[in-house]
Image (cartoon, rainbow, N blue to C red; front, top):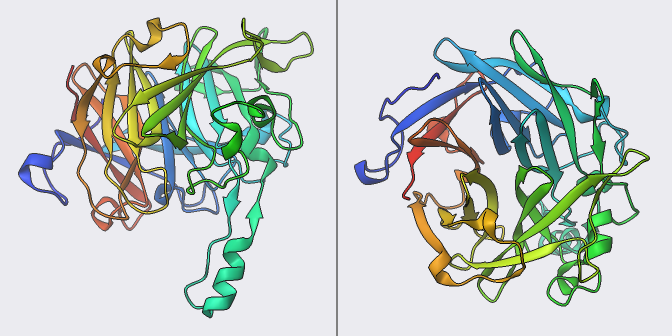
Length: 359
């Protein structure tokens, strides 16, 4: 496992990570500067999978001298018929490996227009009135991982296993199922970063899929949706209908009033990387939901079930922790969106942190 514990970079001694990892991206692999917009990360052995929220694909890295590289961009449109086309923005905010499957999830969110700082105030106000829905954001799916000499690769089919996703709907299949929900319906037409519906973070085990919500945060409680997935006879993924007639379970956790940025499994525990649900910078932390995978019914979980595993350094509206994955027996890798200058190399490299977590 390649990492470097150099101790360089911003931060005081008490908030310095236990190590750092250099992630080398290839600028010719995609037109976007993917290293500046990494939204999530997962791992299968000696292969890292990451996503850039500006693309509709997965970034693959492997160990190289001095860090991780050998970058390949894998377009999900090569494996699936995406509803918005192969090049439509997917805003992938969740990745998870379970066995030889790679799961992924778009943000499910609306987005508000971003004002241009050089425009006059009135035009900036008009820009913020525009709300857009990108249909690729609704995608939740999985692709098989094929084992090769140089590690696993996502493929459209590996023997009987095929790539699959939720059947698309005009406004999103999950959003359709959430309509009428007594807690979440009111947030479906509110854009992301305004405390509207915004999925970030994914974990998978067997037929169970946990989807974190950056927003909404409900009276200070973080929301995680759980679904029991199946593949239909015509090749679509679909959550099983549960006893109450819905296709999901809601778990509400008291995590300091923050939303989810990523999820990871640690034995029976669920680790939750949190941050502000809004656009402004805010503090981030990793929380441990003890025995979270053993919980089979929805509800508001008691504070006794969760514990702070690590408070992360706060650097204002930059260097936002977005991805979390186990690195070794003691440490976890955390990647950042809008990375601070000390993380960036002039050759499309990105520096990620290694942290030890409590519990």
